[in-house]
Structures are given as structure tokens and as C-alpha cells.
Length: 421
Figure 1: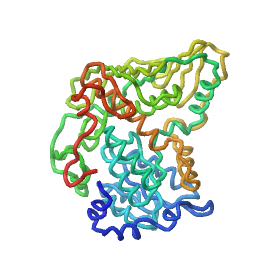
Figure 2: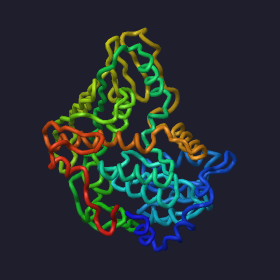
Figure 3: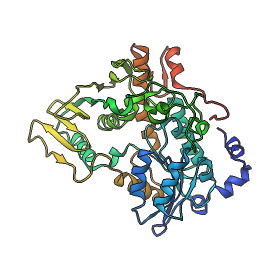
Figure 4: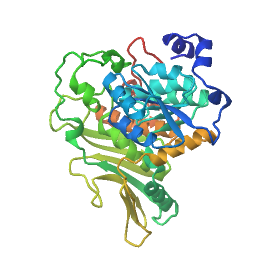
């Protein structure tokens, strides 16, 4: 969406948002170490709750606004946060506020890209959950917006900030594994989380839910509790476990291999429960990179080194297995292992801290928008290969498939009017 179109869509003239949406600190480009950072949180579901739990504990942050298309959700957040926090149903109301320095976007995936672009245009720094976007075209537009408006954009692939993963990368860089030519990432899908009870039962939306706003740029369909509560099972809103767990785990693979764009992709997938959701549950994808390979395995019995999920690296001198709990090396004694302390499964503090520090210094964060785009792209490419059931050749520089217009049509999806890029 062009800047003027965005301003008009929220009822403001071009000068209106320049003054009413961008505060003085954003205009000057930095926040002093002694100033609190004022945050608006968009999306008050389960992951939004996880972020809020950490944010309200920080002495350097004030949560001044929350938003959700379902009013009862944001009302509960306002109660928890106190009278200084205001709730909204429409995220654009937060972007209008000149006191908001940054927004956290914790919505269903299909909203991530457009909301991030709008927030950048409004002069806000952004922490946006993973995956960055649901199409590769949209992801590139998000990167361009972040650079054009000079915003700090942190993607929610928080393993980049966790000590166990940083140690694993240091171990790889030390050369103790020899030449590393393969990485594998895997998860044993928790079928009960996303794919149980996805047979749709259309009905009226619950009181307080703006279903049209929840759908946003996605195609119009009648409300169903399954789409609202199990959105990852539906292609209109997400990419299944590939863009849920896969983006976390393969991001570490890309980081360790020093790669960001495959040469080719080939994949297979099945939905063994014959459920009506769009996204495949059991996947295997092979990516070819210059001098290395990456595999994604999403199988019910998948396990390496006793881990039900994680990332592995194989070198000429040994192997490394890592997940949020620990790092294990084979053979033993090759290098010290590591075990995370305290809560490790949903660990956000370090990633939050990195984001807020970069807001003050204007440096690129640990999971900068370009990193988020490249990691999401690898997952989206895998889903496309599974859908088409053939080997695809990828031009990473131009972000296009080579000689395959059918595959290229997957790179973009139109927005439902009136939403547009």
C-alpha cells in the first residue's frame, strides 16, 4: 500500500500521520538510555500473552496500548496492565498515536506483513512474530519498507538471541566439526495442537469479534471456530508447521551453514488423518545450497539424539545437535556441550532486550527483517515444492523460480479489497 493510500485509509491526510503518528523521538531517530520505550501490542492471543507477561516486567518499557479484533481479549489485557493502557479493536488506532515508539505484532500470520509495512510507514519500530510473511513477494516489500523508513524491525525467531544457539554457532565457527556440509532440522508434529477438530462448522461470530477485520487481506469466508482457533491448518492464514516450527529450526541451519538462498528444492508431504485443513502434516524437504544441503523432516516418529525437535549439523569430524534445551556433540569430548538454565521453551527476554537496545542504538537487531525474510522464504519454498511435487530451481538474487511460471504464481497472492500493498 502506498503511503498516501495508507494515510487516507485511516482517515488522515499526508501531513496528518507525519505529525500525529510519528513522535519526536522517532523523528530524531533515537531514544536516550534513560527514556522509557512506549509499546503497543497488536494481538492478544496465546503468544501475545507470552509477550505481555515479559513486557510488563521490564522497567525500561511501558505498554500503553493493546489491540485485538476480538474485544474480550484486549479487555483482559487492559485489566492486567492498568489504567494507563488503552485497548483498541483496530490496529490503525495504535499507529495514529504519536506516543507509541514501537509495536509488537502478534497476530495470525496473514496479517504480519501488511501490519509491519503500515507500522514502518507510521514511524514505529516493529517486533513482528514469525513467520515474517506468508508470501515471498510480501516479504521483500516488508524489507523495503523497513529500509525506506529507517525502522528497526526484529522478527520473532528468538533462537537467534538464546545462549544455547549462539554457543552452537560459535562451535561450528571454531572448526571443531571439520567441514560442515549438511544440516537437518526436524519436528515431531503435535497433531493435537493444530489439526484436531478442523472440520468447519460455519456460524455467527461471537459477540465482540470483528470477523471482517480478523480476515483482513485474506479471502472472505464465513466465520467458523476452526478457522479462528486453528488458523495454522488453513492456507489462507499460515503455512502449517513448516512456517511455525520450521522457521525457527531452519533459521539455525541457515545461520550455521552461512547460507540464505537454496539452489533447488524438492519435497513430499501427506496428511495421514485425511483432515480438511489445507496444510500437509507430514513433510520431507531437501534443499541444495552451494557446497551443502539442508533437510526438513516433519514426521510423527522423527527424533535425533533423543530430541523430538531441533537442528543438527554434520561435519567431517563430528556432529552437533541443538534445541532450546541443550547442545550435544558427537563424538563426546569434541567440544563442551551446554544445557539451558531456567525456562527455555518460550524464552523471549533476550530477544526483547536485543530489540530495545537496537531501538536506542539504531543498529540492526539479531533477527533483522532481512534475516526473517530469508528464513521465512526457505520455509515457503519448501511448502511450494511439496504442493507441486517436483524439483524446483531457485534464483535467490531475483527471488524467482527458473523457467517455472506455475511455481512463480505461488510467490504472490492478491489481497482482498480494500487492502493492498
